[in-house]
Length: 307
Image 1 (cartoon, one colour):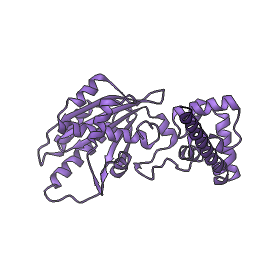
Image 2 (cartoon, one colour):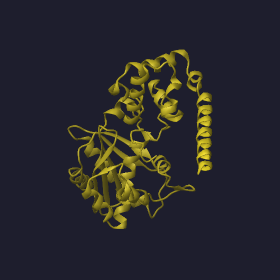
Image 3 (cartoon, rainbow, N blue to C red):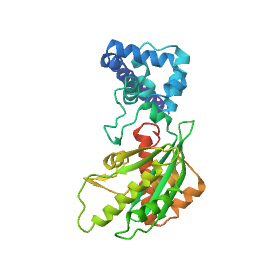
Image 4 (cartoon, one colour):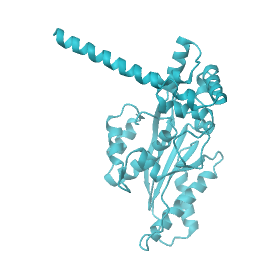
């Protein structure tokens, strides 16, 4: 018994020594990364801003709380590396970079058009749309004050557009469908890779593109139109690891798990059962539009729970 306890103590001591060594080696990581002007600007923002001020930058509500708690306990920060033990290097690189407006969102250009930090902070209700052939699916996710998100709408709507339908007929259908869509601050669509459709798929491709364009045009004509963006397919696939080789595969299994077991994502009971009880084909459409929406929150670092 005593031997086991001694072994446990040695393991704890070794772990502490390793952790201390790593922290000491990271001590001047950010000190050397930024010049004097950048260094002073970041420290000024951290030390002089409250919760609302810090939320303007790329950092989660939870991290803001940890930062403010540490500042209350130990006073103002004098080194940028002081936050490494509680946040880690990767989080701080994005946080500090956003203060310097260096596009440190880790996005590259997956979101078109790009969004400013102020815009990202202002969007609370985000609607994602997926028009595929003869059906429309959408999801609405709202940002809550405690840094969590809530799924408030998830729906699948079939519609029929006959080949060679007059464009005014299609416009009329899209206008009717738009009436069913909830109000939002931001509308998100998936931007598929550019490709020339085969002869057999040309009509389908044209129908889908035409319907989606008209639907977005109707939304843009609302009295309070939402901001509209697209997220590239490759960014969504990489976010949820739905690439096998060079092919994107279904993410339905990911959404199934979220809806069955997740406590981190708030989902209304009726929506949970609506999704889980849907047929496989309908679930595929619903899961696609849901992942597009969730990709926006993850790519802009507002929702870190499933990373």
